[in-house]
Length: 217
Image (cartoon, rainbow, N blue to C red; front, side, top):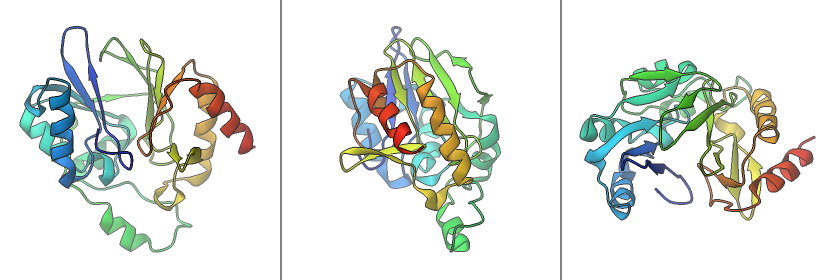
């Protein structure tokens, strides 16, 4: 919804209720508005806001949408307090320039109304399964929209320059744990792949993911 560089996602339920997943950077609000308008909705009509992880490029616009809509924010338990602080989680100790990166990681704080844990089926658009894939952040979560068989990977992996790639290490909380979490994608049942960075794979997403996972072994 934002663009292929940083994506947000909207889900429309059978009852017409619109839920948003992530909200981009603070200055990409007009793109969020335009995407919702394309769906026949409006930012003020969003009923729930779901968070993949507490990094500013995905939640920088969260407070704006929450304030405009009054929609509750849902986050994994392990990232909830970071959202309340308006600060990205700590970065792997091996990453250089941490003070500079931490300053970049600030964003408008937001209240989290509901937390979830691994495996929960969230009552959004017919059912979205929370798949805890920590490493990029402690509470990083990927989501499986079960009715359509689409897996939203979050930042665990990206799709860039024509292929799946591991999520950027520069901002990882735990680099090895992120690698381990990606293995979970081999256990799930899905066809489509959607990425928070990069264009989607609409069909045969799982074979592409399995090939990628094999290449990391």
